[in-house]
Length: 278
Image (cartoon, rainbow, N blue to C red; front, side, top):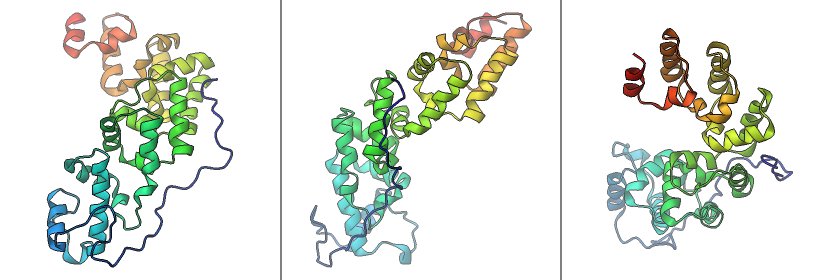
């Protein structure tokens, strides 16, 4: 049954924390690569690619051991298909990767999940992580895999395509999705109808109920005098801005005593829409 996944009975684990590591005092502390450059050259390199802020004060700069650890981490990402130009964004959005307590073995299961479960290529995995680096900190068993299974049950396809929407969807927990699903049930949709709406508009799982979904539903029924059945035909209505698109176009048509289908009202470009109904 859709959205009735059996989640592990234990509570969700806390956000990932990285195990303390004792950096080696040897000249080459990482077993991933050996660094033949000086500490100052390494600093200059990390500043040049945006991993370290060029304006960082001297006393706040990472130690030589920490620099070696960062370089080893970046080398690991290179082995996963990441480019040097990716590192600034990756470490800015997910600074935990620069911690001396970060261990690459903590995120290896995520890359394994992307390959084995999601069937993403190296290029696709890179694209998803770049768009949502926080994916790397998600637990595979408690978050990523249940969410993927749920989305597939709803009929959502091509989740391996590296888009911002897919990256965001994969990082949403099932209980968060369930709340949006149940909201649709409470306003009158059957289980199957709610599942169909979510499958056709999976972005709904990222929408706020009180600040997004409910106001649009109330406007549709209260002000526009339309039936909720129209959402079954065109759930994408919920994706449009209430203030910037739905209200202005509805008021424009209302003044002209014109009523058309939601898709024609919202999908047409401004030029075509306002030229048609002047």
